[in-house]
Amino acid sequence: MAPSKTGKATATKSSKKEKIFHPQSRKADQLSRKALRKEKLVSLVSNRNKKHDMLADFYGFFYHSLPAEGTLTLEELHRIIVDVWLKRYDEELEIERAARRKGRPKSVKESKLEELKLRESEQYRTGFEVIDLTHPENVALFQTWDQKEVAFIDLLRFIRISSASPATFVVSRPGKHISVIKDEVIIQNHSADMELDS
Image (spheres, rainbow, N blue to C red):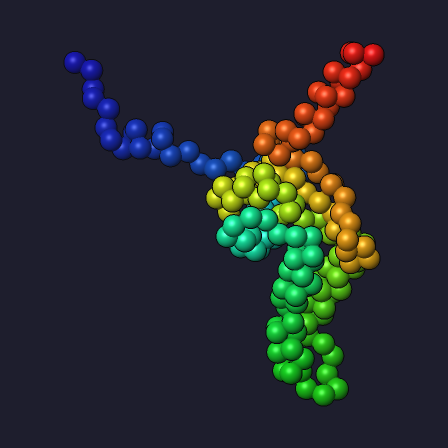
């Protein structure tokens, strides 16, 4: 009869010692590259999530600005940007300024808020890209958004408006959804039919 294996013998085989590599060996270099890659991927994921959250907040602002019925006029869209969007940090800035003692430098938060406000106002002056809330089909499609999935926004039509010329806008992104681009498809089909007739 063969001797049975004891529990002690199997336990020592399953728990292996951690191998120690020479610091300048190929294996040590391989492990360090693997760790750096993993660190880099984690950083990319966190940056992507931050950007996703910022975009969701930006588009969420316009989602909550939608009228219950119909669309906005171009003038109303400008009023929303000037009166609400560009002034959303004014209270925080006033609190920061009031908290600062005389003769002290600006706090980091105050500097960042002022920089952000200046950047956004300059962007609005030169051309601010927003979702087209003046287009009925675009508004109807935007109202179906779940306020989480930022990829849905690519289906919508975007316009570029500026404070320099408030009466005009430029379609910066025509949108990808069929309900938004059907006018353009009809125009293209009509022009193609006219070319065939000639």
